[in-house]
Length: 121
Length: 370
Image (cartoon, rainbow over all chains, first blue to last red; front, side):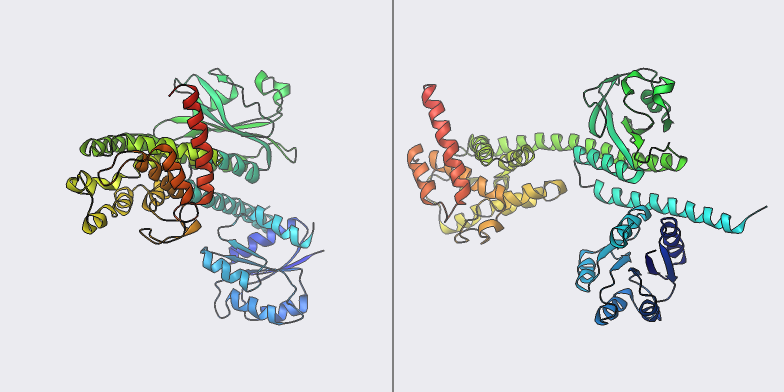
């Protein structure tokens, strides 16, 4: 079973994605904080990380940079899920190695399809 | 017994549906304000296909008399030549009641003969603030399932946005033609006040369209080109009459004054937000391809294509008509001059199209004894 880690400080977003992915038989780990996320990712070796940009303490973009620096984790695809919809933000996200840049509000159905594209059905 | 686990899952499902709807509204309202009616309709149909997972979607418009429905745009299994005369059928019923309605097993229930190729159908009226525009119809889910109440909610959400957007676009179009009428009158007034430029606008429009067609431009671009040509000298409204009508050579100050007209034209039209490309082509219609001796110093493809076309058409007409500051050239001399300036003043590609057009044009008129 494919495994996805979702990190977002909004509990509703986490619930929604968890529900949607689990129904599609994808294993989901949700984190409400980004602080220890890197450790969890290193331990769990997920097939995909879905990441909010704006989070307290460690922002999604900084966490992304952190993951891309670590040889063990740099190959894990990252989806950035964010309310930051400006082109410049998206460019920055993509430069930091984000596989897909998705703006909120996003379509849960479309998100599931994008996840399945990466982790396989 | 209440099962909290199940309860929570249902709530999450409902929240997810609501969020799906929100994201949909966000997506469509964001783009609709910039689009033409056809583009809006095609977006709606695509959005319906993707969001609801159906095989078929069609946007239908009510005709002017309110008696028939015709297909504006359709995707999938839909006969777009079909006209639906006002009847008691499922589609008109939805429009009359102004409510979405779903029908399943059309074949078995024998609802409407003209929809016999479909199994299940959902119809939602497209209503603006003022009137009913038509209907959005979707049919047959990819999964083969029937429609759920959430589908009806999503379709209503799309239709509500679409109805308003289409109505706005229709109103805008009306406004645009009103405005164009007013601008044409202005152009006429401008030409009437200057004995030298009579008929210039009309000829430049004709030449520009001729060049545009020979470049293989699409009808939408040609339409914009036509408006740009009609308006290209509108800035001269602000140029003093004494300069426009001066009999003899212009001095340096007067040239500076004349050279302001492209920028002034752009300023006059600046409020027309959907004229953005047109305004830019007016502003830059005196630029030179090599970037030298133009007014703003733009170069090559920095100059909008329509401006490059206007530039050739404008120069050709200026050379072949009488102007106070110089003698009129013959058509042949003017053609040679334009060819000579290909690559310096003019875009070579535009000049090529111009040559093709002008030769065809000349031949045609020779044959008809012009």
